[in-house]
Length: 237
Image (cartoon, rainbow, N blue to C red; front, side, top):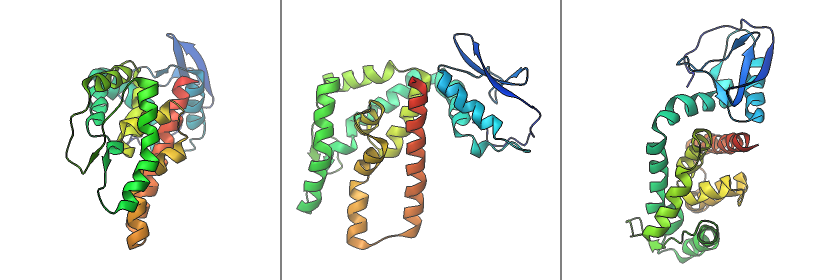
């Protein structure tokens, strides 16, 4: 990541150039590097254009927090790439206790809302990935079919480091591998996916009222979820 930079703008022109089977971003004649001094090469022109636009928008002091695509690219290259197998395994493990599989016993109204929201996602996973997962009541783990877990793990492991970086946030922010994959596969639009991941929280708000601090945190996470969806799209365009 590029937090902590205090450099100031030193370039006049920002451009994109084909490089090493991908695309580089050029600041005048100088290629952009990651904070760890690795070449910043991205897989798609759309992603390179997005990175270039962030650099072009810098005025005076470079502000990394205004450069989410650049930060995600740096993370993909410096953090995910060296431990790709471990990241994929960590994300695949979410299926063992997936949010969509753990339901409330009571109140029955919440259980019904969960079923209406999450059963179609389980059906989609079974059809799209050959991965039927088991529903249980409560938070304790339940044994999931090994062939289903294996199918999901293989799908995640096949992703490159850029898509894996996007999926990481889609999964960890939603708490569900299935919701993350359904978003990435364009079965769900990101706003609907986020709402489906918040069934329990929405229910609590309806019962007990709005908490400003919790709402602020939720809004931040939603923005991060939408940014991860954008990064996925840039990885595949």
